[in-house]
View 1 (cartoon, chains in turn purple, brown):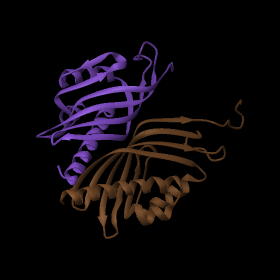
View 2 (cartoon, one colour):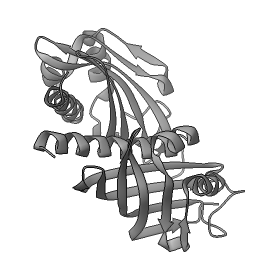
View 3 (cartoon, helix red, strand yellow):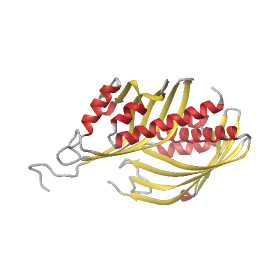
View 4 (cartoon, helix red, strand yellow):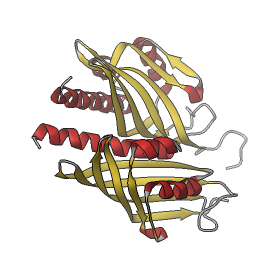
Amino acid sequence: MTPVERLVAIHEIEQLKARYFYFYDNKDWDGWRDQVWAPEGRLIVGEMGRDIGPRDAMIEWVIGQSADQVSVHHGHTPIIEITSDTTATGLWAMEDRIYRSKEHPLNGDTAFVLGFGHYHEHYVKLEAGWRILSTKLTRLRTQYVKVF
Amino acid sequence: MDDVERLTAIEAIKQVKAKYFWGLDHKDWDLWRREVWAPDGRLEVPEVDEVHEPLEKVIEAVSSQVGDQVSVHHGHMPIIEFTSDTEAKVIWAMEDRLYRSKEYPLHDGSHYLHGFGHYHETYVKLAQGWRLQSTRLTRLRVEMTRVFGHPGEKA
């Protein structure tokens, strides 16, 4: 891979993660399925004891989790390593806010979560372009707030 | 556009948005005029029913509204799509904080706004370089806080 090809790959992976956040926070699940994830994609959320795949089963679970909530996710300063012409790893700093209704709280009585951590990710380049193969969320700090 | 031209254009667009934030948070309207906006620039803020254009009207409206406020704007994770060699569509995730004085509250009487959303933008490449042509702000969440009491109100 030439330096230019590597820069193009890095940019495309950054675009991929931007779509991940945009589609997730706007609940555009078709966009999430078709423009973000590889068919065998896995989501690993240690704090919830979850390791879910492949993609379609995982998305079904995420849709159920995300119903009736507003979320805000921001990503920062990725460490991206291109490991071959068609594989790469990424480590993204993240901050998220989850707002729940009184009727649909988290963990029994939490209506607001403010969290900070990292996504540890693997990417694969398919014919359609770079896609997420797996993402594992680790946390530095999570604040659970009872609002109601 | 070859790969290097595209990467160069992407970097130029990111720089324009960085200067947009710097100019807004430092009230540097000359920077906005010189290095951020196209002359026919358009600013749309649906949450307060505002559309301003061209650029001089944008600056007139924004500079008069901000008054003595302190603002902090952060931008994240742009989705950049080129529609031609000289035009691009971009979506930026954003977070903003507005701090107002007791004498100069926000439109609903509050003094602190903490908001999250997206800018939906178009950029155009002019002779002087890439410039912001239009921006429309949509919100995921906005929190308004009243910090100071009002006359007749218990502290």
